[in-house]
View (tube, one colour):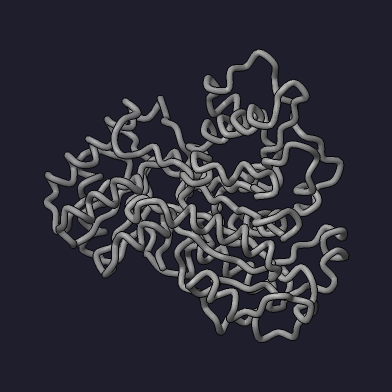
Length: 408
């Protein structure tokens, strides 16, 4: 894993004599570190804060304020793209990110550009490095270049109402924001009053009112923020009500707000339910998500609709198909399941990604305002593992969470 830090205040000091590019540099080798520091000093640039790339420093620095430019040395990394995918989930959207690597392939450069990274091939001369850094600075001033990362969209879709999609959306958003340190916006697509606020442990919650006269397509990030309910520093809830809008208009309104805020966060999570019937529309927006989580229980009717949803995803061309995870949530004791685990996998013709066991004291935990994912049992471990799957991380099946005695 790699260390990222956002510890510098943005903005410029008008009284300073030197040109200030407030930069943080995560280095792996002394040679690269020396060249970076030497180049910045020689050119009169504000010298970057240098931090060694080590696992234990990730959590320590990730909560700090963002730097304007973040340089990450990945010379020793075998798969730069995989590393960049993980890093992109942590970076502040307003920061310019540069990866220094030793792999000279066009495909890597293209993939890193799609993720919002500049790529600098190592080894590099001091002159080349100076020109590269100045070019990035100029592009920041013009607000052009590779930057402008957009949030990844994750759609959590319940095959039927009541299978637990809202619970999973709430828990996933909390794990991503509080444990994985990714900034998230959770979108409530329920037209009538839902229970997402209850699942999040929010008290005295009221939906924001849609503002009459505002054209949703003209919303910008600043105006979109006024619709957000701040659950925690890295988690916001978008839940809007409007009597004058019908269901389709409300969906589009929320979608427009989410689009406007997408440059301000790492993830946009969507709580959707197949019970509305609209998710079966082939042109529905959830098919454009980066990741789709289909939630079902172990009943025939729920599995049948989950199969339809899975089939819709598979009908998309492989090159454009989003990642899809299947989650079986036992919202009743397993002994009452009408379909066995091996039959479920036979039905989908693939392995189920996660099977969440029945949680006996589910209602008590939620009504007490506690998080299911914070507990020390198998269900908690699986909810944390779901966040790891979304992030593309390897799941540690020997996690200590599995070793504790179950509480639910």
